[in-house]
Length: 113
Length: 112
Image (tube, rainbow over all chains, first blue to last red; front, side):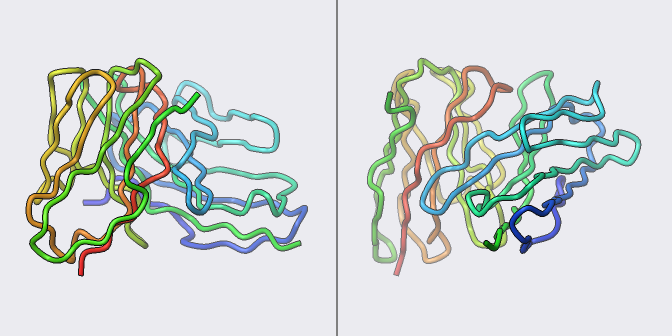
């Protein structure tokens, strides 16, 4: 049972364009939604995270949009740059009790020059 | 500041061999994790340790054992390696269970 579904699997965007990656979750108890960025040969690193009490969070060129009723959240990368080329993972967890992150399967983003 | 250090970086095993993947963190984090990453499968949790002295199974624990040696170190053991265990293994740590994860750079394991 895949609790966090991520799409697309891969994405090619021109430099300066907007990259959009979507995730959907099933467990309504999830209340923490981070995005991780992974460069080749490296471990994932936290990029940005949101909790469901807000519908949007922005950090620089990166924005998370959150739709609680639809159980969906997405990552938008504005003015995409070649240096943003990486694999992006969404994830979800429950804040209460002992809980671990459930990851989506990842999106490989390529930003062409 | 080293963060999370994994050794070795690469390993090739024959089917049936055993080995231990080592992980150490220097951030005084309470929780530690082992994930495996396979193409198209994302990151799947093998085992985790919420705090020193405790370990719990994750999504894919079969064929693995772990030891939380102390607060800093969390090792993953393959007792009898199988080709299905060919993967990239990541160790991670977090201050608390729902704090951001800090990942090491992985161990690429090939089982022939």
